[in-house]
Image: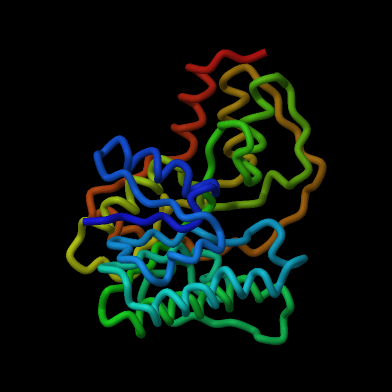
Length: 268
């Protein structure tokens, strides 16, 4: 069956294309605006396109990439399955300690910073309710890696660690996030493609880890990490990961991944 990766030049899309090609499933990776996207048979579609860091500065582009293009794809019906990449950020408004995939979501439409969440939620809705039962959603936690150019706070932290032994970070040690490595996300996406009816799946570790706890891993490796802030905020809900585990993917704890990275890498 054909495979298509939309957003193949992005952080997740690039690694996914590499993994699919290595598995003998080399995908079609159309460029943005490719006129064939709505006319050719796409097979299994991984919809990896999106805006994250600059969504607030580009709200209309955010809606376009998260919902409008998805609407056109679903309307065209030229796929066997479409897997839409969303985010566990959609749980941030929930007053619960742990959020599962079937949890009803809560959004404040008057908050301008909810453009990201609402546009992702609309993309999810179209894929899950308008694709004739051929849609699935992957809700990604905070994805990290240490290759040059990898986005996100922890990625930038680990990249800096290659050349800086002691670090000062513009954040608080009390900030807690669910971190999942990029390779585990790719494994989860490929498992979803092979599953009969995955539905919505959290691609997450299921554990909230503070910056301070990761700094302790650095300290155990003989490194020093300091933070410029000391604020505390309400942590987001933990993402339930039983559905991901049922697909055969269990991401290791971020502290173990970071410890191995510091032990095996060649640094300054």
